[in-house]
Structure formats: C-alpha cells, structure tokens
Image (cartoon, rainbow, N blue to C red; front, side, top):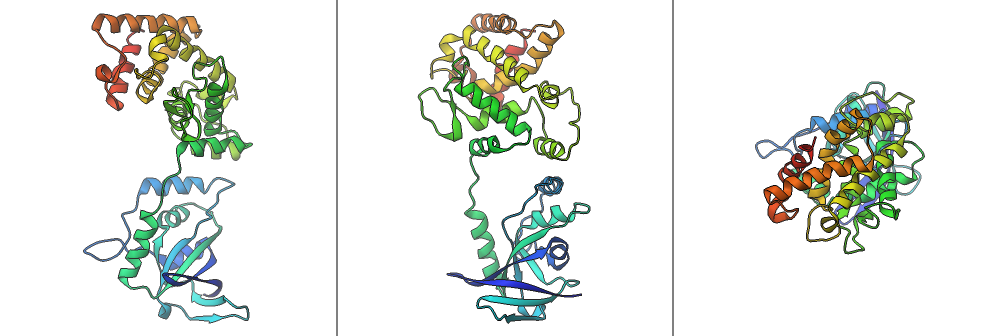
Length: 351
C-alpha cells in the first residue's frame, strides 16, 4: 500500500536529515536491524529483557515514546521525496509493505512495540538518507557514547509529582519523611537528588529507595501499570511490605522502618553518628535491609514489631560482634555485596 509522510528538514553540521511521524505498525513493517557481524552492520545484539520491559510498558495507559527512532533509508528504496508548498516541509511516498529502513537507534523500542498485542501509537522518527556504512557507524556511536544516565535519586524524586500510587512514589515519600523528620534516625542523613549537603549524608536517596523497594516488589513498573489500569496488586509473601503497600498502609511501613532503624541507632550510637563507621553507609544500610525480612517475620510471629523488639535483636548482634572482635568499619567488614551479606548474617543470627 502506498503511503505518504510529511517530513521536516533539519540541517546540522553532519548534514541534512528529516523528522516526521509514523504509525507504529508501519514502523515495524518497514524497518529492519543490521547487527554487527564480520565487520558489517552497526547494531548490538538484542536484549530480550529490555524488549519485555518495553512491551510491558506499552500496557501503561500513559505510555510515551518522545524521542525519535533513527532510520537510515536509501533514496532509491522510496517512491518519491518532494518539497511541499511549505518551505522546509517535504512529502515522502513509500510502500509500507516493503522494508525500506535500517534502524540506527531505537531497536528495542520497535521490538517492544512489535511484541505487544493490540498496541498502536504514533512514533517520531528521524530519517537520514543515503548514508555510507561509515556514516551509519558514526551516527550510532555518537548517539550511544554521549548518553548519560540520569541519577536515580532525581528519577525517584520526580515521582513526588505523580498523583498515582506506585512503589516508586511510596518509597520516595518514605525516604523524604525519614530525611526531614527530626524523630527519624535518618534526619538530614540522605543525599536528596544525589547531592551531598552535610557531613553525615553518606547514603543517597536513590540507594535508600532502591533497597527499600525490594521489600515491596521486584517489578515496580508492572505494579505501577496495574494500579493505573485498575488491576489488583498480586499477593507475594516474599516481600514483607507488599500487603501494606497493596492495602495503602504506607504509614505502617514507615512506622516499622522508624522502629527498626531507631533501634539500630540506639544500640550503635557511636557507629551511627560517625563517618568512620559503615553502618549508615551503603554497606551498612544494605546489610540492615537484607536482614530485615528475617527479623520482621520473627517479630510478626510473636506479634511484636516495636522498637524494643528490634533493640533486643541488635543487642544480641552487638554481643556477637564484641565476642568475635568485629567492628563496624570497612577494615573489619569490607565493602560491596559480599560485605553486606556477611554483616546481614550477623543480624539474622539473632533470631
């Protein structure tokens, strides 16, 4: 079927290219990927996990793809490209039943959309005509080498403006309250937006939220989409705070965390209030979070999740450390995942 597309001419130092929009179904039908093999092609291997994530994201009623998919097209593959009556606007005629375009950037978006049943939207595209293999490689490398990930602390902080519930928003709100409440052991202790303003801010907002979210879900985006679509959050006893979140009892999650971390700060006052120790840094916080499910389930069993209950457990852990000559320093504990697991095991052994 012959179709027409209006394109805006863009002139940049690299040359002239065109920006337009296309139906997502047509984009899938007319495009291909040439993967790098034997010194031919530009694209990396497809990441199936990423494709599944995008496919799931397409179920979000607010799904958006605001950045263009970059296509390389040989001019002899289209029927016509002519300037319209408006300066800088061109009309391209093409057959949507024929593959005419090579994807230089956006393969995972296209594959994710392709994998989603019934999903259709308009997609922005940037079209570059008659590129050589060298030019294709240059465009691909430029796009991908200059990208910089946004700090997770900023991403989580932006969920504050959302009116919809989500694991991201709940964990961000808890982090914000823990950092701003004078009753919290983390009062003015978190690097909000990833920026350090005080000498005791060793833990970033992003790290705090990422670890805490593991107590609620391992599929936060899926939960967020299900909530938007009016679906019930699936039960999963693996996550100790999931039921509280599903039943909108975020205040109980906050109360338990306040009891838990307040207990740690009272049993280890020196370690909690000095930068020489790891307890309030990523290693210590990670260990505390990893140990929390075991201690929580014990407290749940005896119907006691008070600060006093957690104090009794941390006192036992402290006795173990004193007996074994262990101090909460990087010299004794180390850093990284292995160190977190080691310290968490000490806390767990109090049950």
